[in-house]
Image (cartoon, rainbow, N blue to C red; front, side, top):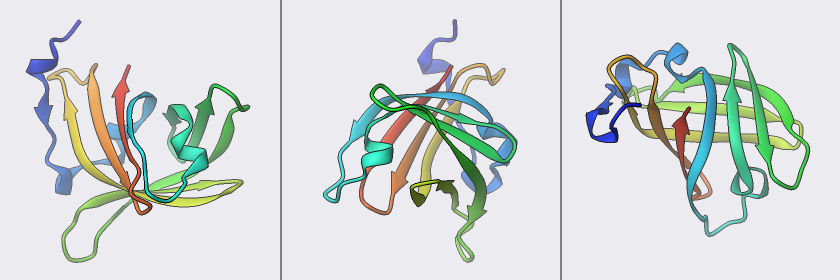
Length: 121
């Protein structure tokens, strides 16, 4: 197992969508002033090539689509997430990974003010 102190920051303007693929576990949540029911109750997020699956403890999994987009001037990456109940955008504020990529941590910040910290595996 990789020591969390050996994780390094990924250069976000150079981030490739392939670095986000796989299962993510939501480990920390900072609530938003505005309600964010789908994402605020989520426990797991799985990103495949173009599809996503969002899981929570109290609801059946939801499937949708996603893609990586960049701010036009700054190049800052954000996720555009589409689910049956609506769409959301989440800015990637931090991505850390182990040298071999087996351990990753990501922080997403939603327009509502919700902040999620995710870890892989």
